[in-house]
Length: 140
Image (cartoon, rainbow, N blue to C red; front, side, top):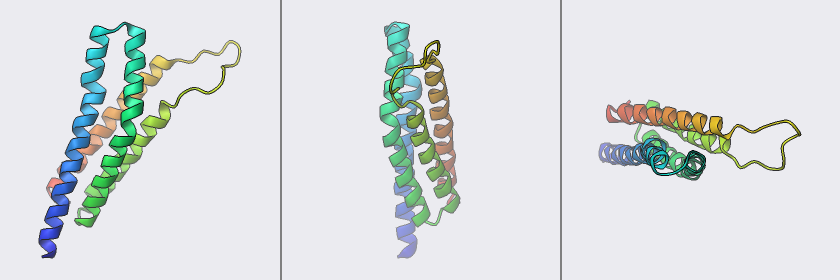
């Protein structure tokens, strides 16, 4: 009975991990490509930043759930990697936090660099999510 429960939890963890990987791929690759094809540069940049800012908490939650399920299913390494990916998605959101107040005179904010960094972080933690899924698939 315990083996069946571990198998079920591992399968649920793999499913939540797969949903997070797919959603992250859409938010980081597919949608920005469409945005930059159809919108002006500044609007597309704002759209991509807003999209990643809004999807990162859900991705982090999915990976935290996946990590917990992996840990309960005795896939310790996959669980740890999933939890690290969850914190990474939350860190991506914090990177794109809205600006408060005005800049000091002569200081400019480079929002374009924020977008590039946040997309790179999102893709990095998508790769970590894929690694967690592969580790969970093998039960590690």
